Length: 122
Image 1: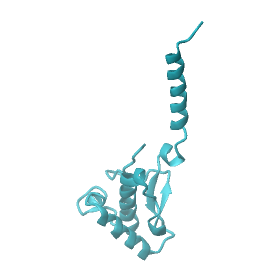
Image 2: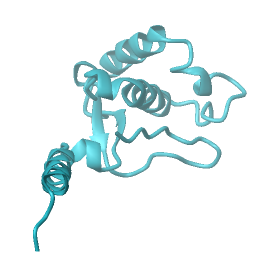
Image 3: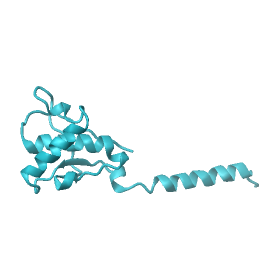
Image 4: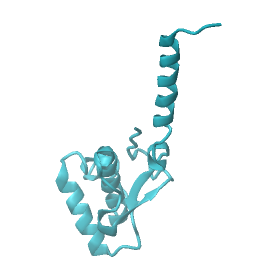
């Protein structure tokens, strides 16, 4: 049985495409969230939280009073929400979950009640 050159070429291109797609990093394939690193100092977390919230109005919208992630009104929770919000919006543009050591990656969804943490997949 003889195969047409176009069929062979299409098959080879599909194999190459599958190989390229399968080379994604673990963070692109896994669900990960960016949360406050409780080993960091309170001052470092506050500085990083203020920076993240200053980048775009929508980063910290849900941690404002009367919004779904305001309660509990704790630094670690507000910082975690802000860090994750920023990270998920910009991770495919090179953003890292570090914030000067104030944040870290987790594989455990930090969402609770009506407060849903974003997750962006490639």
